[in-house]
Amino acid sequence: MNRKTERRLHLLQALLAVTTAVAACRILWPVAPWAGCLLAIILLGLAHSRMMLTPGTAILTYHSISDDAAWLPWSKDITVSRQTFAAHLQTLKAMAVPVLATRDYVAMRQRGEPIPRRAVVLHFDDGYFDNWCHAVPLLVQHGFPATFFVSLNFIEPGDQVRARAERPGYMSWAELRAIEAIPGLEVEPHGIDHARIAVAGAAVARLTAANWRDHLWLQWAASPGPKHDWYDRTAAWAVPIGSAVPPSRLALASPGLSGDAMETDADVATRIRTTLDECNSTFADELGRKPLIFCWPENKCAAAGREIAQQLGFAATTGGKGRNAAGEAHNVLSRVHVPDRSLGFASPRSEGFALRALIGAMHGNLYWYPVLLAMQITRWAVHRATRLTVGTKQAERRQGAAISMEQTT
Image (cartoon, rainbow, N blue to C red; front, side, top):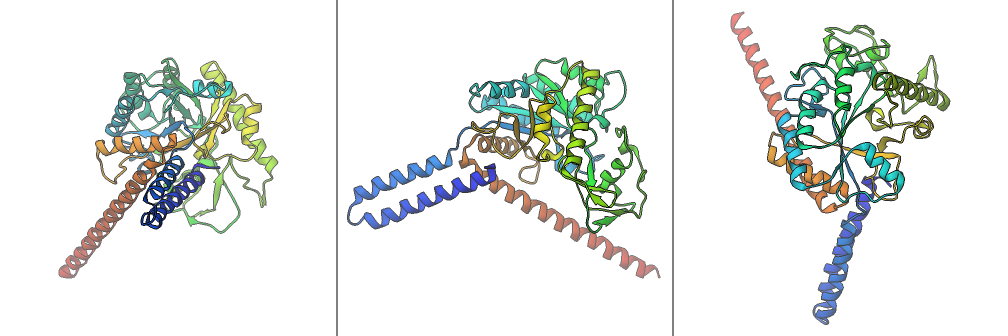
């Protein structure tokens, strides 16, 4: 059962118990008040038990840690500011939760050992250079372990560890080796190229000078090999402007088009095996060891993916939809994305509170869910109001420009 289904089922059961308790009191109070009270207490206790699930482990996923990640077209979805990230680590310290290294956590689950209560695991995806600049120093300062997942084709070349001065781009093997040398910090693979693959269907768009960065997967798919410097490109370089953008799926999760025919599951399995083999050999060459944990791009994998990963020596992979509770598969890691601006605007105090709610819900305390829901609604409302305000200002500017043109003609 995934965590969304579990949450809905338990919330429904809790609501039913509370509703029954209220009805019982109304019916029994006039004739047998003590019986009504006793029944209400029992039902409310049942409701409470439905709100407290089997304890889980919160695996928190970050990407970019930066105050200015405008070089990333998707920065608004994945970037956490330095101030917010610092507030998050302070919150973890104040909560006194045990923060575990991924390899230690997986090993404990494999051995069937009890996981420390309220445990947290920290993940960082994509290997952005700002992780080296901002995340690593703060993690070291607080003594927190963490795992950094990198895609091979996006790793910067170079044998020197660069100064911690933020710039666009990705970490190099030199910086990744420096991270591995820090106790508690780990580097694991995130695949090769974050690939998507075309599938059958009508085109979803056509490439233009304005939107080609929104469809970068097309450029990446058509240019095998290193892609660490894509952000320096000022124009589409592999697939020309005007080309149709086909629908697509993740290459390690679904079959795609091969010529005019759809791939088979065996084709997908071969692609997964090739990817994991290359991760194994590259890590052995660059870090002197084989990787143990694999992070599927966008947390999605094909049906055969986990079995192939296990055959190739990976102890666990990401992509789970649960809460990492007892009874869930020990080789599946269920993660939750950590956003910034949880209320739609910058507020370090609210960010710490939002993180507490996120962790509490992953740990199995459903009393935090209404808090998360209220914050999501507030964030949506703020974003919508912002878009409307920006749209109004743009319309006013266009109208002003039109009036100005009329006055000069």
